[in-house]
Image (cartoon, rainbow, N blue to C red; front, side):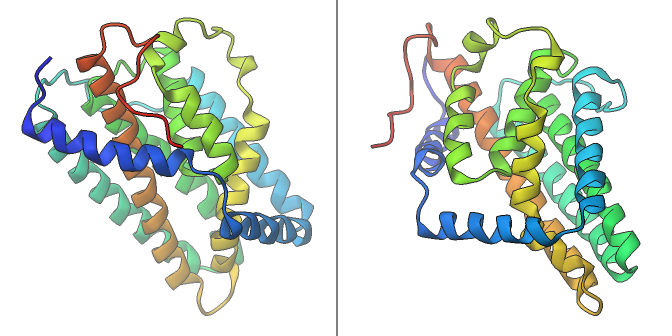
Length: 257
């Protein structure tokens, strides 16, 4: 099928993103992981338990609950128009998350801790909004799984990211074989990767004097990264749907070497 000029540009951007998702961990990635493991070892167990419980409940809510409501699903045929709305939505949530992080960081240790579940809720809400704008049926359990995969892709180590990205390619075909039992979702790995990814930055939010600035900047950047990841994930599905008659056997994206 003929691609618009905008879709051709998006395809080129996707090639670069795919290569980034598939690259092997470098020295910086491995060093960051070692630092995160060290930080995890000195964080009080009560903090770990609180964050783990929060993430677990949020995941269950995403998969089964109705609390993550969003705007009506739109079925547009113009990718450029859709993405203008997506960018507006991302900017809104980046600013909202930054403001919340700044307030929490200025409020001391307890408020900074409270920022963890609030920020997770903001991120997931953003993903639901983006999915709806791309015309995805967000009440479908498997579409919600895709949303969680986007979350993982944005907030995982590079080694884990390679595996998640592979799971997300040709999602329409692959999801038909997924189990309907939500208990088979690996939430343990999910929460550990998420915590490892954000601990290094977010723990600085607990430091008196700089917490407000850290909270504002970190939340803004985390939501910006999540928004970009979501856009590329849905672009990939958009172009797969547009160009591939048999997504099980073909790929519009070449494999990274």
